[in-house]
Length: 271
Image 1: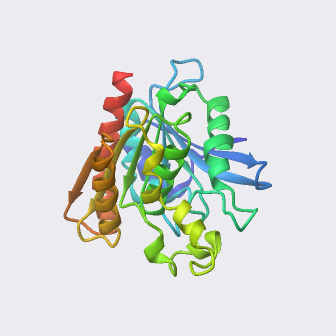
Image 2 (image 1 turned 120 degrees about the vertical axis):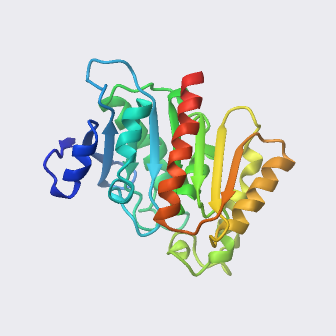
């Protein structure tokens, strides 16, 4: 079910700044038995009978929701127009961490994003419906989610990024509801090991997935991002890695998303 939100007061100023169209797409998740809200931004060149468009999936952080990117970084509308692509902002629950929880059958956001949502987007929009036309990135929890999902589902996405991503969950066993998804660290260490992105680099062969990772040097996730970067180098996995002054906040992410959109646009244009 697709709901047009032309008159939503919260976003009035955004509409004036950009000709892109904003939809709220409601997707029924069969795996979780509930309906989930997602923002879909189509560029001003889009029409139901037009060319097929690449899609960027843009994931929010812990405590956020499907409106977070649009409300905190409204320029993503302009980027949709500038780069002629569709941007999808899913709701990933406040603390799903975008995997299928091994301890909670009601939390299956890996299945939702990688299968149910992608299928619904391809059904409802004019998309390039194969991995060459899909990229995924996100901030914080969403940075973890984007790399986690793309590493595990290289048949779905061909490019991925992370902004200030929580790429090693193990040092944060008491934070952001992660233990509600994986169980306590002391009793479920294997869950934490298996679901931390830093331990999933072995899934990459350096050929099928284009990567961009960035993190501010004042960020509490900076150390984990550096360690992932070094692991990728050790395994000869090509990637763009950026570190610059910045903390874990929207000032950093508003700046970061500009560079990531340019990266994905260059990739899509080559393909």
